[in-house]
Length: 214
Image (cartoon, rainbow, N blue to C red; front, side, top):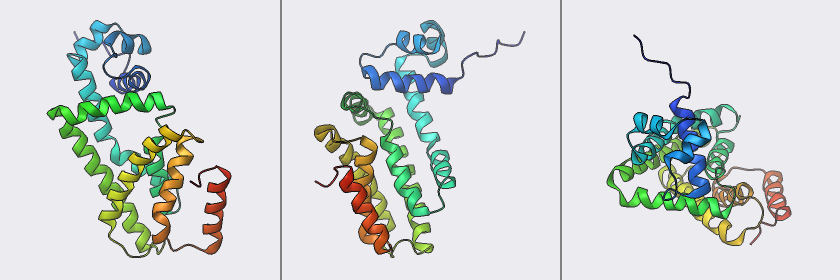
């Protein structure tokens, strides 16, 4: 007899797990929480993932595996490689909507730093993201959107700005997190951009309207 087909795919369970982490944090998260979110019994989740830790590891593994696909999707939706860089970096922040959600995700980040298995995956995720940024930045130089620069260093700076900008937004709480992070990214990119005066003026005007001149 063949096994019964899974009515809820793993990807849907892992997406629900990510949402629940944002709501309650990893410490308070239970298999029952995730099961209620997707309509499965905790015993079913236990059978699939082995434990809560196994579920969380599977979530990080999915995140690592999806990096290239996510960047490919962003690139396909933008004519400009440089616009795709800004969009991809901004999207990294948009799963957070409130300071409380950021705090809960930072609690998960503590696990990434303190548990060797999670850290290995977090490091691989970071390396893949940085490589994807660099690919887009190299393309932007080739298409003369950017001046020649050290794209490895700039890709690293992009990661640092996104992380720092999230924390800064959570403290100031001015406007949406997406607008806040994108304004910081534009500031980082501006010295390297081969842009018209009109583009620079438009960017500055938009930032001023959003109250992001600080």
